[in-house]
Amino acid sequence: MTGQNQRELLVVTGMSGAGRSTVGNALEDLGWYVVDNLPPQMLDPIANLFTMAETPLPRLAVMLDVRGGEFFTDVQTHLSQLRSRDINIQVIYLEASDAALVKRFESVRRPHPLQGNGTILDGITEERVRLLSIRESADAVIDTSDLNIHQLSNRIAESFSVAQTNQLQVTVMSFGFKYGLPTDADLVADMRFLPNPFWQESLRPFTGEDNQVSEFVLTQDGAEEFITNYLAALKPVLRGYVNENKRYATIAIGCTGGKHRSVAMTRRIAGELAKLENVSVHVKHRDLGKE
Image: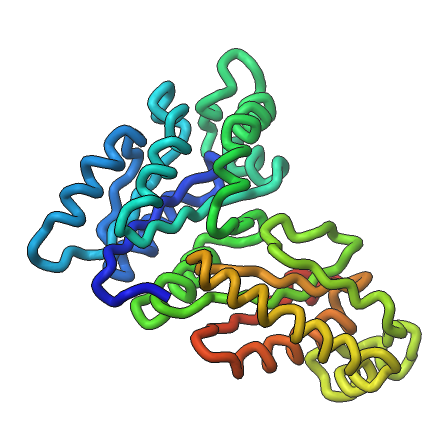
């Protein structure tokens, strides 16, 4: 996807309380040089140093957030300028639900940086408005609502280790529609067109990870047709992601509860995608175990 000598710059931004400190620590452990709370106006100078160095520099990760005050308002302009240079720049946006963010701020007894005289939720709402354009243009969105610090660190290690640098990182995620759509999904598929194993008394206690459920789901009328056509549709999309230098993608596959159909189909789709060249596939079952 990129030349081995191309400089790598990772910009980590997103909602306050969504886990930037955890991500920064995880990146440092992976050998990245991490700069925290850098004003966006300093992105260009630091990139100049980065590209002019005669000896190879560590991969650089810059953490940006609204603590920069008025300096933060120009971040999109500076990111656009950097994308036009010979730098492999990736923007990672950290997301979390309102409930998760409020709980985190309350647990550390700190105000939200934008709440002023209002509530924590007021600050969160204002921050979402300010960051909307950055979120929409980010290369990857990571929802940390249900991740503890260890799970988030592992997610970062899977995506940003040296071994994974030149591969498209694809997460295939099962989920239950009744628990809400994954906010970090790039593509969503609905398995509710297949018969539900939940209504089979002998299958109800098991999950899509069990052979008897997987066989039931994948042998239903329309299942193989879906797999064939969906994979055919995904291949040009993934090629396009590579051509556009998008390095991370999340494919979400849902059913009612995220226990049977979506899990079985996620495993099958992930197995087929893993056969593609320059694609690294990770499987996640978001809602498995909630029922």
